[in-house]
Image (spheres, rainbow, N blue to C red):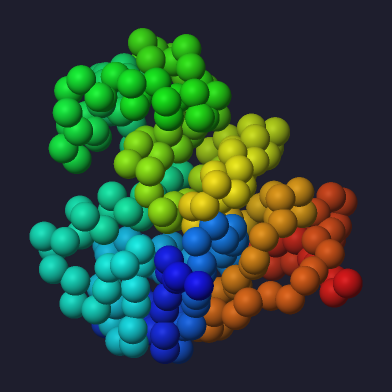
Length: 243
């Protein structure tokens, strides 16, 4: 089976501050997975390495057909057309409407003018925001802004989506809806990897679970996630027990 994300014996972080060692990770098209762990254990650094914001220190890495080993800066924008990122802090252009935020990305990635309007409508329909084109970011709730961010990530139909704490700034019920949308996107063939500390999301929308802890990445076995009313451990994390 074709591989969309692959790391072999990888070291993650920066040369003077590596946070993960001997990382092995492989995801196929359409797989849906979570990346969990306490703050500072390497979740964001791992994602940044996958979309080439941080260099791969050592080992082998490939995302959507692009080798991460010594990737040239000129190739990074091409990688990010195939590997879209959903950030926690939205990063929308506040002086532009939703339509213009999305059109800006399409123009920058070479879309013809006559096709831009239709593609904007398509992705807004996909994230259930069909009437949002003329609205500005300040006129949207946090959950609505995050759905626009997801629409932006979908513009170029990427085979991989990486989401870094995408529910961190939205309420719990809206968080569930966002993850449901991402789960549906994966079922249509897109590989989705979500960094999160909200285990109730995993309980409702199960997927593979990778944990960053003590400098290592491990894949968790099948767990029963005690997401509601369970005792907490450490930095607000929720306990879980083996089935």
